[in-house]
Amino acid sequence: MEIVSSLLDLRTARLSLDGTVGLVPTMGYLHEGHLSLVERAKAENRRVLVSIFVNPSQFGPSEDLSKYPRDLERDLSLLRPLGVDLVWTPTAEIMYPPGYQTWVEVEALSKGLEGAMRPGHFRGVGTVVAKLFNATQPDKAYFGQKDAQQVAVIRRMATDLNFPLEVIVCPTHREADGLAMSSRNVYLNVDERRAAVVLFRALSAAKELHEAGERDAERLRARMKETLAGEPLAQAQYVSCADYDSLEELDTVTGKALLSLAVYFGKTRLIDNFVLG
Amino acid sequence: MEIVSSLLDLRTARLSLDGTVGLVPTMGYLHEGHLSLVERAKAENRRVLVSIFVNPSQFGPSEDLSKYPRDLERDLSLLRPLGVDLVWTPTAEIMYPPGYQTWVEVEALSKGLEGAMRPGHFRGVGTVVAKLFNATQPDKAYFGQKDAQQVAVIRRMATDLNFPLEVIVCPTHREADGLAMSSRNVYLNVDERRAAVVLFRALSAAKELHEAGERDAERLRARMKETLAGEPLAQAQYVSCADYDSLEELDTVTGKALLSLAVYFGKTRLIDNFVLG
Image (tube, rainbow over all chains, first blue to last red):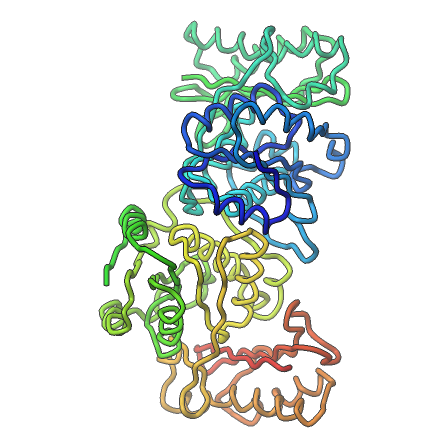
């Protein structure tokens, strides 16, 4: 497993990779969700490239960039047994050198949900992923469904900008009690960790309602809110029942839809989602 | 010489091109300037790909998109003798299908000069060039110095977004009297065509002043304005003496600088530039 940082070393190492290449872009502090992406990439490509980069441009000024968890040695030790060929660990100076001024924006899909709560977030995501795609030239790139809007934005960008690659979306990995795996889960104290399962419970309750035939999106949102309200440590930021493709809020669920929510536990903000239909 | 329109046909044809590929992106209605780019691309690459696409997203609502000159048969007959391998002629529907919403913006470099006169122009340029780069995967891409700010924006974008290719800038081709070649020159009537040489004369006058030792940028701009004022058919829109890299207006010329101007003749708008130093 080769580990490179500079663009020049990356270019050289990339040129030496023969056959198809699967890219797994990460911000490090890897968990089983990331590792399942790596395993899928390994199964579908001759070579696997993992990038580890905590991208400053997708964090707002009041967000957790500086305290975002990092442990490169641990990450590398998790990747080695999986047969990863190349790990790219650029610095912020490599990705955004002085004079940097180019931004990629996916307009409509970036406006609601996470985009409404985190202005500029998806501009940072779109930009860094365009850079990762160009720098690593993968045949396929792997992302987790956990970040549903991110996945929608990246798929749209890849199509709109004619990137010659396939974006693969993999299911959300969950802890035994249903909590979606996230590097941010380490922020939770014991009580918050116990309470955090309420995201899964809220989504499950709305999904049950949908399976029982409910098509009024407001009732599905209300069911999620009620469930969240039953957990004193949870402070809901938004709950949504949106069209799966456009991410616009629905009145009535007719086709494929996305249930999603963002919830604070103290200062820790968690998101999760289910796809309906 | 293969000619394709759809993305699928382009992808297939591109995969069949062996060796290095030079891309010459054009809006068609080719003149000797374009052909010199093709010749340079042919000399430096095993294969040459020319795109012909009048990109709607770089025209403002009051600009000349609908009347921009087009003659595909003539263009193809000019390219055939030059040994071009592949011509891509996408439609607006192929490049911007329903739901299209991704834009590439190079911020600081897009603000002044042409960007100030043509809001959104360089967002359209950056976006379409990113799409052309991804769709055609060239080793080198060729642009004319005639569009100096466009070249600055594209070079910055290619570096910032880590495109794995080289942007090559070629000298401006001129008519015998000095008028820079442009597809828009066909808009000029006989009197305007005669008058249009004033752009070259204004740039030459300022360059002479610079060669004589003048370093006050305002005096260089004034010399261009005086020259333009001597031509009754010319209506100057801007004259500029800017830093070559940042494109910011200069007080004093110390290093490499860009003299540039935009001038109306009736409804026809022409631009030109000289590099100093």
